[in-house]
Length: 246
Length: 248
Ligand SMILES: Nc1ncnc2c1ncn2[C@@H]1O[C@H](COP(=O)(O)OP(=O)(O)OP(=O)(O)O)[C@@H](O)[C@H]1O
Ligand SMILES: [Mg+2]
Image (cartoon, rainbow over all chains, first blue to last red; front, side, top):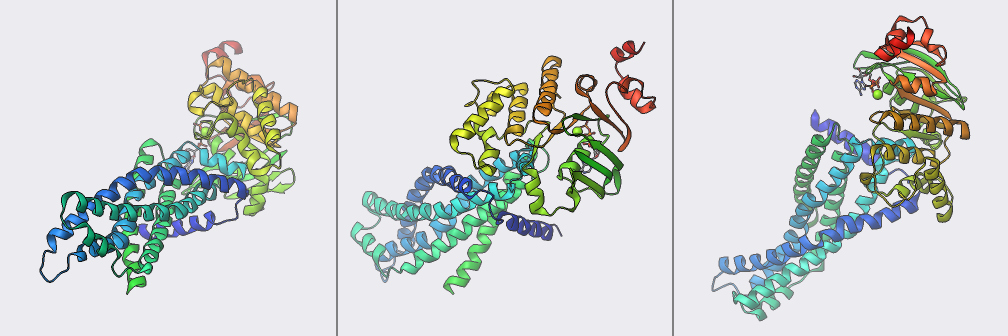
């Protein structure tokens, strides 16, 4: 019952978000602001995580695939596939759900409980559209950039670790990285990223927008936003993988 | 002019407004007074359309809000300014950006005209050199003033204030009250103010509607309120020792 209520209200909110903006130029400016606020400001954490993720992945693969029949470059190959297909799009999106999702929900939730959203509505502004649409578009634009950077840095992490620790010869790593490369994998990863971006922005926006009460409820809404967007990311990861790769 | 006719509203079967009819005049400060919980905020929210009333009509000049669709309401709202109890300034925007916000959304003014309008509105509420401060850096009274400036920025025909002077000291409260009254006269606005402050009633209550438990019991000016003959209203008016003394 509760699930149906939230789903119904979520889709009604989406309809409201997609109404024609009263002044498109304001929305455009807002998109730029949000791209910086939600995207570029996450670049640091995404970079750090990606480099270390790639490094650990390479070490793990190297230690767990020591087998005379497996060529050494398979380690590089496996690392690349894991990073491009799952670690960069899914894990980084989950981390962004935590960082950006809580930020969106608490920002919009605070605006709700301090009547700022009422003030927007009274002016005749479509508050849901003004608050959520630019964030969604900004994330749809900037998240693929973050994910591509993450892929690159992840692979770089593996390269650095093989250079420094000699878990495997660098030459073999590079050969594996380039081995049997299919651009479709990147396309698949970016499709996922875009869907996850929409989930993070709209689900977090939803929980923020319907906050009731005070500071305590804003905190709860932001937790809820992170938990629910993470669950939907995992769920859609499964659905999209089945649809696109099977 | 705003004419409210036979408006009722209940929440989960509990009636909060019962068959209220009242008329709010243009160019006058119209007050809705009553005890806490009597339904003032609910009535104001029904009038601006933030809540749907269960029955009755709400006429803005000769347009009925209850029959308007979504987009008609949006157009009407561009002529409405509202002052919220907690000021409701946008935290992420500076004072000037707050005031310019409705202009950005709906006016065709250029940058320079907007800035001029913002400065005019700020001057009108006696604030200077705060253009680039943020709401968190202002005192409660200053926030109220900025909120008034924002409410009048787009030259509204209707102004709504929910407890404009709650949480303010008596001097600032009267200054804010009179500011709203002056602005009402100057721009010939239809202003509705919610309050439970007898000082405000005596200071600016040109047209006062008294609500008790969701019903309208009395309408008149602050000249007549002291001898209305209504028991509930007398209870409200003479609740303080001061007013009691004055009566004697
Ligand atoms: N959204 C709501 N759902 C249920 N009941 C509500 C809702 N809003 C208000 N009420 C009830 O309606 C009654 C009137 O509330 P209202 O906020 O209008 O009082 P008020 O006259 O503005 O009081 P105050 O002076 O304290 O602001 C209260 O009993 C309140 O519990
Ligand atoms: Mg109230």
